[in-house]
Image (tube, rainbow, N blue to C red; front, side):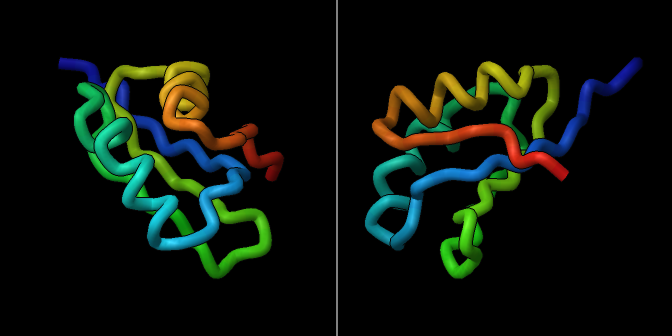
Length: 75
């Protein structure tokens, strides 16, 4: 069986534990997200998402729906 596991990184404005709490139900309840974390200490508030079968665009839509800004992190 082929796996669609991918890691995506995004620049966000999720900048405190309260913001993380607000976005948590959106990301945790989404089928296809295995793990996620936000580095609130980083300048770009980097959100790292390990997915299984959902696209970068779907992650962006989920975070925008929760009220935050998000854009793909250019490496």
